[in-house]
Image (cartoon, rainbow over all chains, first blue to last red; front, side, top):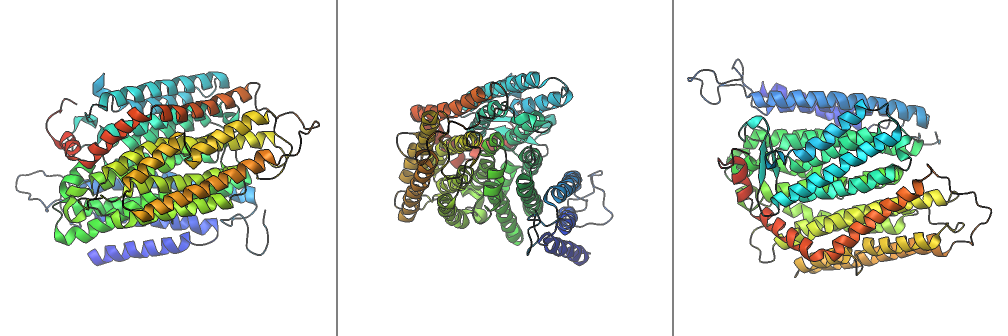
Length: 116
Length: 516
C-alpha cells in the first residue's frame, strides 16, 4: 500500500510540475490542480498508513500506533477547501487574462508574434 | 482586557472587513471614514499590545482554551507586537493615499484591504505552523484582489504570474508542513522546538527536507534570490497604495524565516540546529547584489523602487543570518537586533518611493515615472525635495534611519569582510541609481510647459491626501531616526528574547498562565 500511495503522489506531482511549466494558462491551471491533489494525498499519508483503525482513542486497550491519526484528516480538509477556492480564483483570472491580453499565453503573447 | 489582547489585532481588521462588506452600499466617503477609524483603532491596539509585551511578557491565547499543543495558540512576544505595529502604521498611510480615488477604480477595495491586514497580523501572531499556512492564504488571496485592483493588461499579466507562483508556493508549504508533522509529530512551533532536539535518527532526513522546503517557501514570500523574479513586475504594475502596503509582504517571509530559524531550528534543536544557516547568508548576499544591479538597470521610478525592495530584503536577511562571531551557537543577537531596526526603515522607505512614483505619474502625462526628459512637474521644488529626502533614506546615507540600520548591521558583522564589502559596494550602487533617477526626473526637465493640461485629479482633495500620506511616511522615517536610541534598545531586547526561546516554549506549553 505504501508503494502504491507513493507512486500515486509521485505521478501526480510529476504531471503537475510538467503541466505548470507549459506556456498556456489552461495546462498551468490543470497542473496546479494535480499538484493540489498530490499534496492532499501526501498530507493523508503523513499520519502513517493504517487500515481499519479508529481515529480516536476509545478504549484503554488501544495502544499508540494502533489508531488512525485524525489530525492529517483535519489538515487535508482545510487544504481541500483552500485549494478549491484558489483554483476557482485562478480560473477566473486566466479567463480575464485571455480577454484582456487577447490570447492564453502566460506571458500575454505567443512567440513569433505580438498578441497584444 | 489583557486576556484578549493577543487576538484583538487579528479580530479588529476581520470585523471591520466584514462590516465593510455588509455596508458596501454606503457612499464612498462614509466607507472611507469607517475604514480609517477601524485602522486608527488597530494602531491603538497594536500600541497597547506592544506596551503589554515590552517588559518581556509573552501573551499566549489558547483558542477554545484547548491546551497546547492540541489546540491552536496565538503568541504575542516582542517580535510579533513589533511587526503588528509596523504593519498597522504602514497600512494607515496606504489607506490615506488610497482614499484619493484609487479605491473607486474597482469594487471592494476597503474590504480586501482589511482582509489583507487580517492575514498579515494573523501570520505574525500565530504560534502554529499550519495556522501560519492558513493566514498566508488569507493574506495572499486578499493580495491577489488588491494587486489586480483597477485592472489593465500589464497588471493582469503580472498578476497571473504572481498568483500562479504563490499557488505553487502554497503547495510546497503544505508538503513542508506534512513532512514536519510526519517526522516531528507536531505543528505547534513551541512544541516543535521542544521535540526537534530528540528527533529519531530515521526521521532526521524527513525533518531536514521539511525544514528546507519551509525555507524555500518563506524565501519565495521574501523574494530571496533566486525566487525574487516575480517581485519587480508585480510591485511596479500594481497601484501605488497597494505597492506601498505590499512593502510589508516581503517582510512576512523574512519574519517567518527569523521565527523558525530562532525557535524551531535554533541552538537547542540538536541535529537540526542551524538548518537554514548554510543557505541563508549566501542567498541574502546574492539578493542584495542582484537587487542593486536591477536598481541600476531600472528605467522608471516604480521599477527602481521594486528593485530596492529586493535589495532591502537582502540587507535584512544578511542581518538575520549573520554568524555568531565567537563561533558558539548559530544565533547572532546583535545582527537580529540591527535587522529589526532596519526592517521598518526599509519598509517605509520603499513605500515612500512607490507613492512618489505615483505622484510623478500623475504629473507627467507624457513620460509618467520613466527616466526621460519631460516638462517640469508642477511644484518641482516640493517634489524634488521629497525625492531627495526619500533617496537619502533609501540609500542609507546619514543622517536618516537607513544609515543607522546599516551601521548597526556592519557593526554586528565585525570580522566578516565579505559582508562588509557587499553591503558597502551595493550601498554605493544604490546611491548611483538614485542619483541618476533624481537627475533624470528633476534636473533634465525642459522648462515648464505653459500649455500643459492641468493635473488630472482623481477627486477634489486628492492632492492633499497624497501629500498627507507622503508626509506621514516621512514623519515615520524621521521618528525612527530621532527615536533611534529607544528603538535600538527595544530591538536589542527583542533579539535577546529570540535568541533564548526557552521562555517562549515554557509560556506556550507550560502550565503557568493557563488562565491566559
